[in-house]
Length: 377
Image 1 (tube, rainbow, N blue to C red):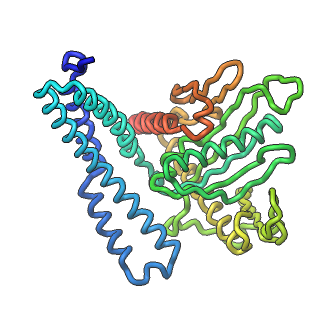
Image 2 (tube, helix red, strand yellow):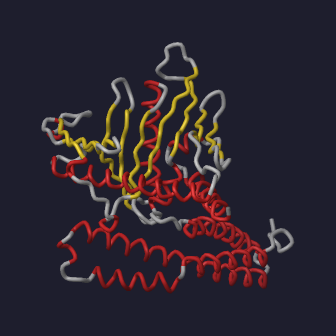
């Protein structure tokens, strides 16, 4: 089959791609990216960098992420130039195979530009940070606990698919199956900006594998996403505001971690927030990790209180989040649908295997629109 200009308008498609690329490049600010890379490279080459491993990891990770972002942007511009040249040569030589390859590449560029455009929408105060995600089982008994574990696997697989470093920090197992709760940290540029749109109540509808009568069961799980706290955030927590309890870690296996009082539970008395941590073997390490998560949650709480005050001053602004944000239906039909954005798919197994990029991209676009409308009001 011969691919001709009459069937596919290469000029229009390439022009659209170049226009979108220019808009993205302007929003991401190439000169600013280069300056940031230069500054991070200088810090990374300092002799005493690794005297503070945590800070060194932060600097090198940010440098790697910024370099990758600039390379992706540069490579995209080169791809547009290359496909334009390919089309010109193929049309001159009336090479149908090359035109077909060019059409595939133009469509691929358009898709990749859509993904790159998402980066320009991650402009929230904490969007560029790492994320701490907590999943809790809700109403629905053992099915809810099983659903919470399904969500944990889904997010860990999503991180794996995208090359994000994820570490499970705490897991509380349910008695019969699944988990009561789990907390994990995702270290990647803009991890919080991407994953924060996953926060809310998730609902599962299916034939319960735990019901011997095979009845349909609806269960719920809550997902909380907070940005990783940084030293500059100044979240001071007096010792008098917290209660620290230690206990033996729980979970499958008979490792040493299960036989010592290494697990830590910190209760923030003024707010009632509770953080548990049992991933590390050392009580000191678990306490440090729990304090970091507590600070992150207090940071979000402070931010929400500030936003609430602004809303009160500005008048009634349409709420941006509902209690139930996504439904996963496995019976009587197969469908995962986001109730805020309307984005849906019938590929339920792929979703539970971590293919949630479409949901996250739609969520980011939706949130950006909500923020813009709120600002206009």
